[in-house]
Image (cartoon, rainbow over all chains, first blue to last red; front, side, top):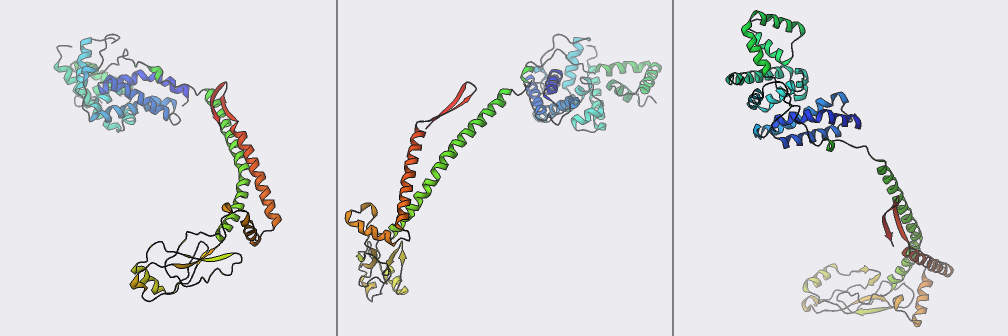
Length: 160
Length: 270
């Protein structure tokens, strides 16, 4: 990967990576640090990373930092996640907030899996490569997380 | 095949987008047959988290990298050139100084040779007067034997040790020490005594006067070098000293300026 490819990755993946890290850690500043570190690692390893693999590489680094480094801290506080006031897209803003709280019920790993699946559209196989889990684990953890989210939504069904 | 037992997994796989086209059609058909499942399907689809596209990373430009500027290469080139200049100047100075130091060393060796035969008057040995020096008498020239008083009292232990070794002959720094004769009763008396030390009577070249020229000539005559050779060496040394002096003066008046383009990086003043 050359300089131009790297800079293209910055333009293309800095925002998704920041959203992923922000949702994982619950802290905007931590998320910024994770994004910076991820791109720093990508720059250092640019000779070994193909352009088409750069996104997975970035999310792999960000996942490790978000989940592994923050797992022990147990300081996820979604109150600090910046509120999105516009461009939420179609859907009920109340449902959005409920889903945010539901997501906060998950552990860091499950949350990361959901984000990788729903935000980035990665397959089980790709998520397995990023997270270091196997395909079955990804599937099981994701289904378990999805059921937890659904149950939380059922509890507050009156909102929906 | 989708059944009431496994339909939930199909719903989850559908929400994850992991069903094949055929499986999607099978699930669709199953939901059509079981309308109560549709609500559950919609709930699972609701759990899909939508990205907040408005949340952006501020300051992407800080993550961007710029190409290495050509100036950097030029700077390296200039630095390399400056280093080469400094190395050349240093090598030149070293090269000029190198033969001079060699000649000086030769002279120094000669001086040392002279000095080694010169007296070190303050060198003393302990005890035992009486005996004349035996060694060093084969050296020609004006040498004399000198009795030097001991600087420290001889202790009982020293005397005993010396009587055990009986006659000793010690040579140190070119000074021959006389045989030491053990004396009965010395250990008891422990009185400081003097010993004979063979000390050449030649004075140091620095302190010599007109009268010592003859002595110096005698020493030079003893060296295995011809007079013409000595004169040649002396003249070569003086020439080199003059050259070094002129080089040193030139260096003192020379500045080495290292410039990068029009910018002066530093100036070395000698």
